[in-house]
Structures are given as C-alpha cells and as structure tokens.
Amino acid sequence: MHTHAIILAAGKGTRMKSEKPKVLHEICGKSMLSYVIDNVKDAGIERIAVITGYKSDEVIKSVEDSTINTFIQSEQLGTGHAVMQAAEFIDDNSYVIILCGDAPLVGADTINKLCSYTYDNKKEAVVLSARLDNPYGYGRIVRNSKNEFERIVEQKDATEEEKRITEINSGVYCFLGKALKLALNNLTNNNKQNEYYLTDTIEYLLSGGYNIGVIEEDNCDIIKAVNDRCQLAELDKFMRKKINEKWMLSGVSMLDPDTTYIANDAVFEEDITLYPGVIIEKGSRIGKGCVITSGSIIKNSEIGKNCYIQNSVITDSVVGNNVKIGPYAHLRPKSRLSDNVKIGNFVEIKNSSFGENSKSSHLTYIGDAEIGENVNLGCGVVFVNYDGKNKYLTIVEDDCFVGCNVNLVAPVRVKKGAYIAAGSTITDDVEEYSLAIARSRQVNKENWVKNK
Ligand code: UD1
Ligand code: CA
Image 1 (spheres, rainbow, N blue to C red):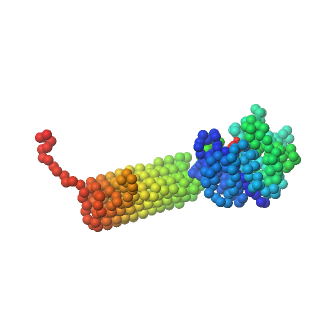
Image 2: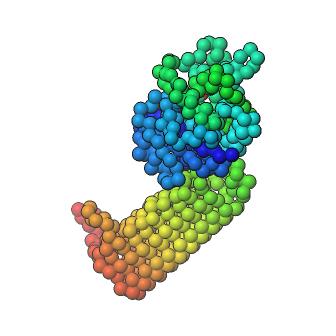
C-alpha cells in the first residue's frame, strides 16, 4: 500500500524554555526530529514531509536530506493547521501517517502495525493510543457507553471526568488522504487554545459515517512525547539504557551502566571497559581492548585498539593503537596520535601530530606541531605557537629529546636526533644530532647570603 508521512515540527516548544526549536533538542546525541525521520524511513516510507515554522531554516538545515519535502507553517495555529500546509503533498487515494517531531521513540514496528491495521480493516483513519498511569498533558481517547471511540479531547478542554481517562492519544495517526483533506477543510478553532486541532478531524469523520479506529500500543514508554526538559531527561534515560544494553551485549563492559553516556551513533569493538561517568559523544569509534576511566569525555574521535584513557577529554581527534592518555590530559581538535604514544597528566594538545613511540609524560602544551617518532618531550615543555595574532608551526623530527621546561618558539624546526637542554628557549632551528642550550650560565656567588 502506498503510504507517505507528515512530521509536525513547526512549534517552538514553549515549555522547553529554550531558543532552540524543540524538535532539535537531542536524545543521546541525536535530535528528536532525526529519530522520527529515521523511524519513518525504517518503516519503508519514502515520501516524507516535515512541517517547519519556528526557526524553520535551522530545522530544515538539520534535516540535510534532499528527498524530504518541507512545508512552512509561518504561524503556529495548531496541529491541524500544520497538516493543512502540506495539503498538496497528500494524495487522495494514498494513506498518510502523521507523527509529531517531539515523540522520537515511536519505531518502525509500531508505524507498520498502525498502517497494516488501517489497510486491513479498510479504515479511513486510525489513531494510535496508549494507557499511561499519568496521562496529564495528553489528549484523551473518549469512548461512548458501548466503548466505541468517539473523539479526542485535549487536556485543556477536558472536563474533570475526562481528565480521569488514562487512554491517551499518542499523536500518531494513519489517514486515507481524501478523508484527511475533507476533515481538515472543515476544522474550526473553537476551543480553549483557539487552535485548529488535528484531533478534531476524528469527530468530524465519525459524524460523517467514516470507518475510524483506534489501536493501543502496549509499550507505553515508546509513545511518550517531550514537552519540557524533565520529559527530555526521561526519554534520554530510556534511550541510554537501550544503547548501553546493546553495547554490553556486543562486548563492552560498563562498571555502572546507569552513569555511562553513549551517543546514539558511537561505535565500539569488543572487550572494552568503561568506568562509571564515561561520556562517549557523537561521531566516536572506540577500538578493541580499550579501557576508559571515569570522567573521560570523547567526542567525534577515533580511538585505536588497546588504549588506556584515564580521566581525559578528547575532541575531534584520532588516536592510534596502544596509546596511553592521562590522567587529566586534553586532546583538542585535530590531535593525531600514532601507535604506542604516551600522553601523561596535564598535557594539552591541539592541532598536532605525534609519531609512533613518542612521549609527553607531564605538564606540557603542544599546539600546531608535527612531532616525529621516538621523540621525548620532558616535563613542562611549551610550544609557543601564538604571537597574539598568528599561529605558527613547530616541527620536532624523529628521535629528538626535548628537556624539561623548554620553550619552542614557532616557527621553528628541531631536526632529527637533536637534544635540547632543559630550560632552553629555542627560537632558531636546531640541526640534526646537535645539542642546543639556550639559557644564561649559572653563576654561584660564594658566601653571598652571609655577607648580604
Ligand atoms: C498533541 C495532541 C494530543 C496528543 C499529543 C501527543 C493536538 C491538538 N493534540 O498535543 O492530543 O496527546 O500531541 O504527544 O494535536 N506543531 C506544529 N504546528 C502547530 C502546533 C504544533 O507543527 O501549530 C507540532 C509541534 O512542533 C509538535 C507537534 O506538533 O512537534 C505536537 O504539538 P504540541 O504542541 O506538542 O501538542 P500537544 O499539546 O503535546
Ligand atoms: Ca507534544
């Protein structure tokens, strides 16, 4: 059966108290809208429209998919009004699934179940419902004395008795195109919020003798929508648990899964151990055998096999195999570490590469540098890369030894095998296999203290 989907995403999300459009808030590192789009695609639906309004450009940009049609609802006059903006997208004789951009967990199985039920029973509209212990905020499914579906009443319009109904409208529907269009053309905004409610289409179609249905989703967690940040946290927790379970079953040990935060798109190999409080953000890949300890945050970075990362922050970087990092190291964007590198405590690296077997064990700043293989950087080395205006490159070739407390004032090159004496400030290139000392000589004044 030919089906298309309309996703409602025009609202600001006032209750989020945020500049950011609600549907762009993230659950485990992925926007709610992206989840809904992916769920629809997973259900095999190819024709998709998204209704945008509040910060429309931002929402459209986030979608980054030319196959998706977007329609703008410039004033947010309600969910029914939102669907009207896509009237030309709706085929009379096709079915259309409507979903809300703030309900990211409604998966492909549920979407398919709703569609099949609609086609198989030749319905013109079917609503997906669920029973919630706390139905507050949702539209309620009102049934007559024969338990037949009658209409949907919004929280704000409900009587005290209706508010006690625990069967709620999930906000997911399947309509036959022409029935939907007819009902939309007859919507009014005669309610507490003066909005054109999509939910009112049901009552209209029922009164016109159309064949309308409701099916209940048993897993009431997956239909939950996000209206405020408490609900965002609740869904985040739900999704986090799912993601963590998936990776534990694939060979990742988590000492405390409740405090392990893994982005939706992060990828892990086997035999990895994550300590409590580890955060793996989006765009990250972690290699086999890695151990990552508490407080580490890894974002958009690739980590090789058998690395040991202690309490460190790594962003937009690439790390080879058998690398040790931390405790308390900071790899800023474009750090590239080859195999067997060691980065110790309080080392900060930015836009720099380290060749194999090189080390910087303590208290060092490395910015805009190319470091060769088997290089040792002593404690307290500073790559002086910035003159207040521009940044410059430092090159330290293979097999060099840079003593403690050395300043390398860029641009400068330390050639292969050179040694630099501790405490030197290097402003000129150092030739291969030579020793550079750049500090004033020590003078000892005998008995100076007694005589002063
Ligand atoms: C809506 C339903 C309610 C249901 C609930 C499920 C209506 C009238 N009510 O209520 O029955 O239980 O969803 O979560 O439909 N939107 C627009 N344009 C608008 C208004 C909303 O695009 O003018 C979008 C929002 O961006 C959001 C979605 O529609 O993604 C739902 O809007 P929201 O205001 O959150 O509706 P609810 O009050 O939650
Ligand atoms: Ca909502």
